[in-house]
Length: 479
Image 1 (cartoon, rainbow, N blue to C red):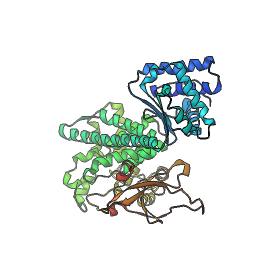
Image 2: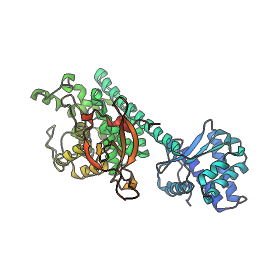
Image 3: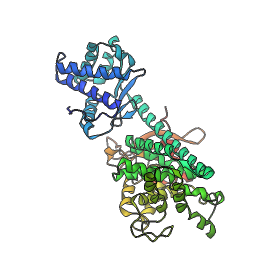
Image 4: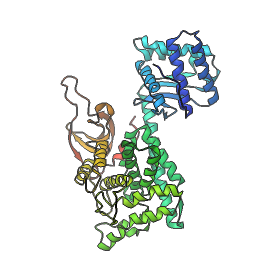
């Protein structure tokens, strides 16, 4: 386990993580009286003193990632070997992490060294975690708690889930606020919306699968705003998959949030009309991309930002072969952001119940339908990446299994090669209503026969069963 100097410690979490790594590494290699061991112990203690702790600090593993105080340690180039080394160190000891209490500021260096030596040595024991937990009961180690067990991982996942949900609804409120201010006073600031996009990118970096789950939130009564956020979520995931920089992703996310801003000019009776629109009403509806451009020009933002977020909202209904609307005589192809929005916009629209359409396509049906427009309605390369990203049965799909169970697709773990999803089973309560059951992997096999325990029979339309997938995906695990 080795790593060179950390070239850039951008956060205190990374600094603490790095000092913990160096301290463990030096103790593994050298005797207690070695000068490097003493220097590393001192560096760790000095970092702790600078933090002036008033609450516990938690360093833990969750789904193969390291988190310090709930913030994921990012896989920057200079940290990769360090993170992988620490993951192996803790996994070999079957540990989920450590919780450091404020009283660590008061302990002597010898007590710190004694515990860290036990942490290093426990790998040699038959049950390393159990042995270390027993040693940690010593009064000298009241400053640290050894983390082990599913409850630790559950809290970590639930913290991420709550952070993601909070970000989603704050983003939705920011879009609503901008639309209302534009409508009432003719202008609006976008500082809050920019901050929400930055928070969305943080969620994406921490857990792409969980972030993608946010796009399953559907609200019939608040469609315009949930649709805007869903388009931003899907666009950011697709943009991230093709390797866009964070700066580009920020602008793409704002495009997603504001792509339908022009609908503030469309009469509400048209937006919410049940049934088909008349030719005249459809003409009005088709004006909203250009209206979005006008509204974006009213935003209080720099000319540079406006120049980067104007074009894609205008293009999101133009289609890849320019056969959509508004009719344009372009001399070049639709922009990259525009092509991304086209895919995200249609996917969310056709998987949502609307005023004029009382049913929606299931996620896999939506992908199949969109693939028919590859090369005409949509960029074929981007659409293929999108389809791969979503999986055979996209997140939020309702599945019937050969066991007779119903389940909602949660994600596609990397270890399965993206071929077998994890599924949340749905159980009926005593009143016949669906409730969240256990989460299972469709990659699990029977040990005796070697065959899969559960197989997919077919996908079902969640709306037909009155099921809102996000209700189960984003709620806490049942106790």
